[in-house]
Image (tube, rainbow, N blue to C red; front, top):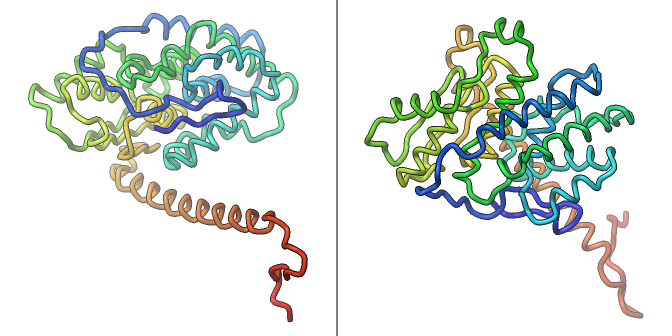
Length: 319
């Protein structure tokens, strides 16, 4: 993925550059860090006594997870005023929309709230969560250049589970699958002779932890992760949106489908997600074409002034 600078060369979207899937990557790196991160984020958010719900702190983690752990990134984030930090996180998703529009769209429940003009208290609360996440080493978990290393952690899953009340989890039959269990399930599902491509479907994906393990094992087996189709669904909008955000962080590639349906009511959610993806990509292509045409028009209108005696190009029909 191409590195894109934001504000300064030190601030960049990530993970940058092509994925560096390493079969020799040592597993289990950073899992305790993800749990500690979730606890720190929870303490920071609840200390702010904000009424906005858990979508905001979970969305902060999703947004920060799109940044590369480049030299100076963390210091630059810490130096931003709260409202400037808010606008940076909003811009993260504008760039992701350009790169992979369907995933940015499916992740909307995690970042739509960034489009408002925040109060000072709201901006400070987001800054508090950001600093707590940075203190816990989020960028080291999600911002490394190595895609395989990024697949060793699911901070979003840990944060969402920690912030959500026990009653809410029970009502949604929601429980975060431990990493070791997810890896065992992935090994059993994929089997010893993993194909070079195929479609993997998980109708109750949570935040995508099983696919995190599956993608990691596929890479360890020398398979191209982008050759697989990853279809994830969850009835909880925040969990489904986290699947889309994690698909970006874990570099699952262009063949990702995310649904947010009750599979008992909508068993054909995969087809629905495919139609949504086609519609989003069509709209994206149209908006990109319009933006390029507008940029070309602006470049033409701001070109060098005509020399003396040379007629200016007409700007209208001249009726």
